[in-house]
Image 1: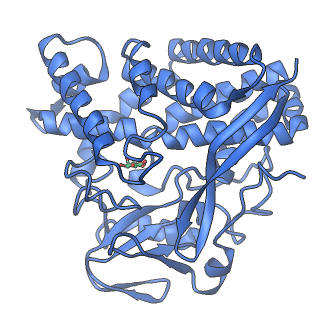
Image 2: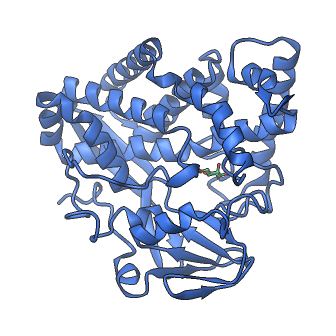
Length: 385
Ligand code: EMZ
């Protein structure tokens, strides 16, 4: 039975009846918008549904109690958002450059060869987390040794095993960034810190606070999301080994397969917005200053848009998924993630890697009257020789 690679749709019943679902979160409840069309409509309407009101409030669970620094550009609304975004766009497209791709290729190939020599290993601590951290050094253009520090922080920069909001962990990241930004000011290298400190923004330089806000997002946004995507991919191919043969024989399908796995796993369940005036979503009244969320995970299983939404169809052609968000706030790290996943699939397929799951503990997210599997707390596997 294919159990570990089965990521159920937790939202169908609500999506097909009322179109919304409801969850409590630290006395700041969230009305979750579930349908693909409604999610896109609300994501587009930044005047009614705001991102920038209070730093941390659009994240679910809300991070208002652990940080007051704004993540940029994701907690900023247009028109400021547009200006920040265009400042960052070209740097975050660097993963498309041939030499960047080549470095990623070497990293992935070496790490896959290394794990193949082990009797058994935990995919998260021995592969996904170090891969995410090392790949991030390429995106920042910092020495690869920096990854060792980031690996020691675990899979999430704000969450720990003990608590879903860990302010002491947040402090570790914030202090680290203050130090790196100060160093880059004194002794600039050609890394993202120095590029940001020198960037022209609306006729002035960015403040250190702004640089820090951009860096926090770079560290936090693409961390558990990438780690879960990579780990879930191992679970998927463990239980569907023939699909790797299919990719090896049909390499042009790999970019479609990347999109399909990301749609299916939807590593970021939802993102919130703050309602700016009394209004309606899916014919439900919502009050000013309450929260809604755009539930990407539900929209990505909407049967009105996706044929057989609960089946992984690696060569799915029409795939308007919203796993990277929608409209102006679309994920800035998407190019990096797509490249990483493309290279991962290519190398797993080339090696015809045969994964056996030995032990697994699934990671569940509580979402009101339902819950959703987003990944694994632990996934212990072996590779057949
Ligand atoms: C925030 C968020 C960004 C948040 C695109 O998502 O990712 C979450 O994992 C973080 O906790 O702070 O960066």
